[in-house]
Each structure stands twice: as C-alpha cells, then as structure tokens.
Image 1 (cartoon, rainbow, N blue to C red):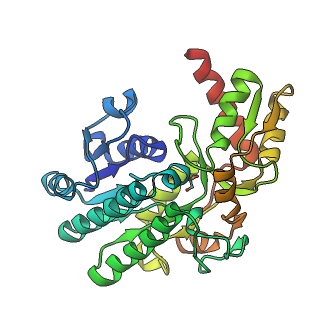
Image 2 (image 1 turned 90 degrees about the horizontal axis):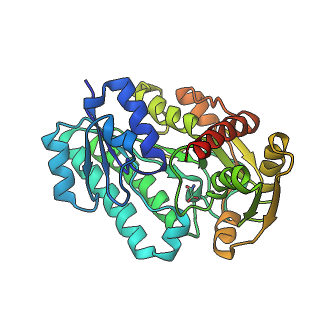
Length: 318
Ligand code: SER
C-alpha cells in the first residue's frame, strides 16, 4: 500500500492534490507537509499534517524513513515572479529542496513527482506547438530551477533507478487556494475581481497568449502519470501538458458571456510581462497523450463556467 508525502501541501496545487490523494488512498496514508503558509481547515482536518522545511535534509529524511513513505509529491517551490525578486532564495528552496527529496527517495526507494513548468522554456524555444524535446534556455531563475529539476530527476532515475516523474504545467487556475507570486496569477485574480467589482486591471498585455489548465485536470495529470505502467514511458520528466491557451482579452470576453457588465483594463507589470513574453504560447502535449493517456476535461468555456459558480458561492459565504 502507498504511503504518500506531499510537500508544499498548503500551496495552490498541494492543497487540492492532498485531498484527492486522501480520497484515493485513505486519509491516514497521505501526510501533508507545509512550511510558509498555514494549512486551511480542510487540509489539517482531513488527515495528518506537519510543518516541514524541505531545505532541512535531516528533517525531511526523518519523516520519509519514520513514516515509511513510498511516494513523494514534491510541490514546495517559489513561483516565477516572486523568485525573480529573491533569486538566491528561489534557488535554495527550489533546488536544495528537490535534491533533498531525491536523496531521501534514493535511500528509501520512493517514487517522486516533480512539477516542472512552461517556464522551463525560454525566448529561443519555438512558441507555437512547442515540441516535447526542444530548446530549453529559460531567462528566469524560476525557469532555470525547473530545467535543472527535470535534469536532476532524469539523472536520479538513470543513475540510481529512482522512479521520478513529472509534467510541465502551464498556468493553473483553481477556485480554492490562491497561487501567490506567479506570472499566470492574473487568470485566477480576474475571477475574484469580476465577481466583486465587475472590473479587473490586468498586469499582462491583452494579447499575451499562454497555456492554461483548470486544477481538476492538473490533479488528474499528476495522479495518472504516477500510476502509469513505467514500461509505457519513453520520457519520464517534463511532459508537456496543456488544456487551453488564451490571452487576457479572450478570458475577459468569456467572463463577459456570464457577466455582461464586466470590464477589463491593463496596468502592465514590466517584470511579469517580460517573464510571460519569454514563455511559449502553446505547447504540443502529444507525448503525454500517447505515453500515458493525458486527456484534459476542461476547456476555456467549461473552466470559466465552473470558476464563476465556485467563486460566486465562496464570496457570498465570506
Ligand atoms: N504558474 C507559474 C508561474 O506563473 C508557472 O509555472 O510562475
């Protein structure tokens, strides 16, 4: 039976992934570990929770060995915009955290999930139908930690047989936990502003097209990849996955279908615009589709309908 550790469990992906894994494997078999944020009620109430700084190799290893962990979903990381403000800290958390996880996995025979990102690409990458295997020369510290992470995971697999797997997530949109410090955060913020004020000032240009995904699909991707028979996998880490690709103007137009009075303005943040401009517009995720059956459920229309329903209910209850 799997015994799972989720690092970064209080973050945007971790909070929902932990709950999905608890439903699948039983609450006591999924340990949530967070550090920088307090756990939400749901997370702390539905199963074991502990505070863990992934940079502390001894503390991490004590949890993995003491709890007889067999699978680690390693989500603890700084996102792109906040990483650009604190590059050394981003390197420390994103790289040393991953290295500590891989070392514990090597010693104790754990399977590892590592989320890479569209940020693992850079200005020299083909921006449309970005291939699975192509130029990866990112211009952000976050992207550098993601490429290095993909390589480290592949290295630990080839050198030590660690079953490390991962995807390159696009911008993730969730109706529960807020992202915090990413370049694609606008695609979440816009829903709260639309419901509350019927207006949103976007920090990216109207025509900034990026890949995106609704959180239920992101959770499904992680679990599905981890459960796939290893013999089917030609790649292991950094699978391109996407569900939709849109600009702020297109997202605003879709929201206007539901809220006709909604308006969008633009107050460009040069830092985040430069980051977004260095990322691909639309990835080719056929390797994930062929090798492990990746198939998203939510397109732009379905995602916007569901987000507005949830955010409206959430704000009504506040
Ligand atoms: N959503 C992330 C960010 O904007 C990309 O991985 O930083």
